[in-house]
Image 1 (cartoon, rainbow, N blue to C red):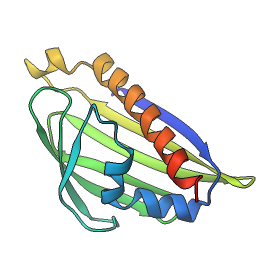
Image 2: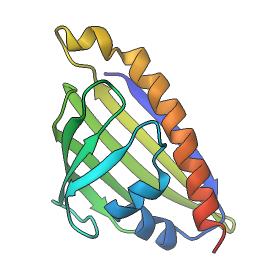
Image 3: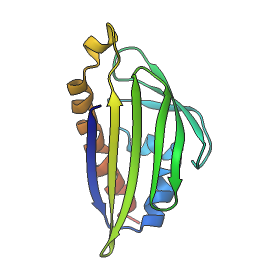
Image 4: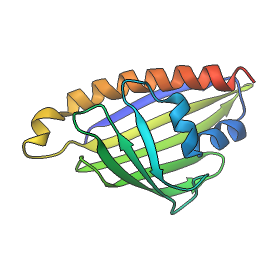
Length: 149
C-alpha cells in the first residue's frame, strides 16, 4: 500500500496544535483553494469513534468522503480512517512529538488507489503529487496561524 509522509516543526505546544487539528472547522483555514473542502457532518471536536463527512473537490466531480477516528491519544496522536470514498483504502495518522520549545507534526497517510476506470485517473503517483502540494500548503498555513499567536 502506498504511503505518504509530511513533517513540520512548529513553535507551539503539543496541546495547542492538537486542539487545533482535532477541530474539523479548522480544516477550512488550512486547505488549499485548489481542493475546496466542505464539512457536511461531524462533531465540533474529534474524539475516538467520531465520524466526519466532507465534500472534496479537486479530482473531477465533488467526492463525498466519510472518515472515522480509529485511534486517539490526546495530545499525541490520532488516526482517521476512510469508511466511504473513492479510494480502496485511506488512513491518516497524525503524531505530535514535542522537542525543545517546538512540536513536530508527523502526518502519515497510507492509501490504496481505486480499481477500474477510476484507477486510471487516480493513480498512486497522482495522489502522491496532490498530497505533496496540499500538505506543503497546509503546513505553511499552520505555521502562519499557530506561530502568530
